[in-house]
Image (cartoon, rainbow, N blue to C red; front, side):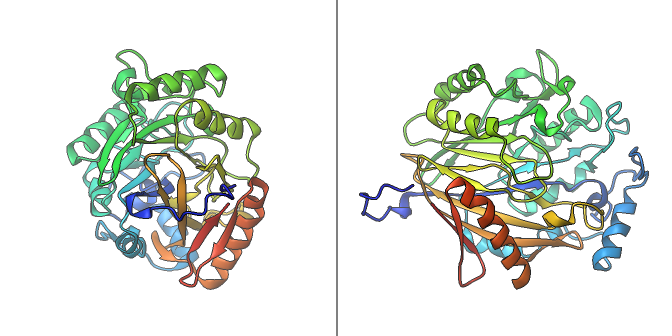
Length: 379
C-alpha cells in the first residue's frame, strides 16, 4: 500500500513512462499477409500450412487484406502510442525472424517471420525486444542467428538471447530524458523453453533462468550491481509460466519479490500467459505476472474461450527513476480482430475490468475504469 503519511503529490514530470505488453507473435499467419512471406510450410501436428491460420481468422472475424502495410497490425495502438508518448516501448518478440527451413527437432509449434518484415517493428517504433522465450529457436540455432542479425541490422535493440552467453545475458540500456532504463531478459523452463536452448560458451541460445532459488536471485543481484547507478530504472523481463490460468504460482511471487528486495530490480515484466493476469505493487514497485498476448494469429483457434485471449492490454507505468516507485499505471484495453489491434468494445471492456479486478484483489490491487475507456491501477 502507499504510505498513508506521504501526502505530497508525486512529481510525475520527472517520471519515466514505459509501454509494456505481452507476447508479440508476428510470424506464421501474420507473416503470410505482410509484404514479404516465408514459405508457408510448417510442421505442426494438425496444420501444415501457415495460411490455414489466415483462413481460421477470416472465418471468425471476416476478410483480412493481403500485402498489408507494415503498420497495419498495430491498428488503434498507433493512436494510443501517439497520445501516451511513452519514453520506451518494450515487447516480448514471440517469433523467429528467419528464412531457415529446418525446425528444431520435436518442436510441435513453429513461428517465423520473413526478415524483410522486420519493418513491422520499426513502423511501430519498438525500442526493445526480449528474445528469451519458447519460440525464438523454433527454427533452430541458424534461425536464431538470422533473427539476431536482422534485428541488429534494423537497429532494434534486444536482450535475452545471443551468439554466446555473454551477449545473451547482457542487458539492454537506454537513455531517456529522465534517466537510464536497463532491461534484463530471462526465460524460464516453466514457459516451455527446452533446456537445450540455453546459451553457452560460443553457443547461440537463450538466457535461460536456472531456477527461482536464492542462488539465482544472488546471481541477478550481481548482474544488476555491475551496471545500475543512482537514477537508473531496472526492468526484469521474464517469460515464465503456462499459457492459461489466473493463479500466480507462489514461487513466481516469491521470486519477483526477492528480485525487488535483494537484486535491485524496480519492475518485473512477466509474460507467457495468453490473457492478462493479476498485478501487484510490492513495496511501491510493479509486478506484472502475466501481460497476456498483444498481437497474434490465434483468432479462430478453438478452446479456452473462457479466458478471452483476444482481449489484451497496453500497459503504461509511470515510474520515479530515483526510487523506482510506481507513480501510476494506465492501461488501454484492446481486442485482436483480423490480425489487427482494435479498441475493445464497451461490453468487452466491462468483462475485462471485472475479470482483472477479481484477480487483482487477491494481490492487493484494483482496476478503475476511466471516462475514456482506459483503466487505472490502484493499490
